[in-house]
Image (cartoon, rainbow, N blue to C red; front, side, top):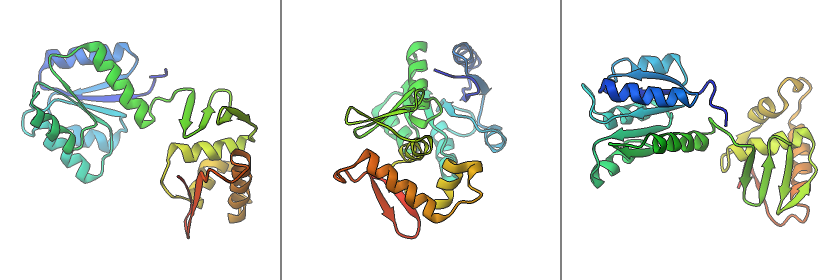
Amino acid sequence: MQTKDIEIIVIEDEPDILELLEYHLEKKGYSVTGFLSTENVEQFLEEENPALMIVDRNLPGVEGSHFVSQMREVGYDIPVMFLTARDKESDLEEGFLSGGDDYMTKPFSSKEMLLRVEALLRRSGAISSDKVKYRDLVLDLKKREIQVDNQNVELTNLEFKLLYTFIKTPHQPLDRDFLRDEVWGDDSLNFHDKTINVAMNRLKKKIDPQREKEYFAPVWGVGYKLI
């Protein structure tokens, strides 16, 4: 697991707890920025791109879940874990409804906190494992190999990148410009819309030769999506 260059924000008004959280997270290899209130956090978010926020709810000025709700309304989709003494069921519900992705109560286990942080980072894609699974597709990112229903399938490097791009964003229409930049990159100088059609057809034939599984659906006027 690679934690290098992963930045985490901690908003906690008790200096001792903030210091404890910073210690355990930094020991694990994360880059940590701590705040005793929400006062300067929004400005920080405008300048930096942290992977996760750990937020107490009992904060001076703005209550933690209200702050997260405001951040969601502005458009920030950074994963949030609440770490708070508020442990009623209604508190838990309020935390998730405000835009939280996880909720942990004090007193807390440092080990559990680190496991929850890692799980959130994996879910968001900030930490990636060597293997990615979608339906009966398993991609080995390190070996650049793919199995379909436990059978090895030979893909070109471009086809592998194309499939992985869809798996990272399933059920969402991906337009041709995005696919061109993401998959072809610097090799897209002589790119044509038909290039994607040809590549998609080849990929579909390789991973679904009987045309039974329908992994992809065309999106009229846009491109394709993984279903």
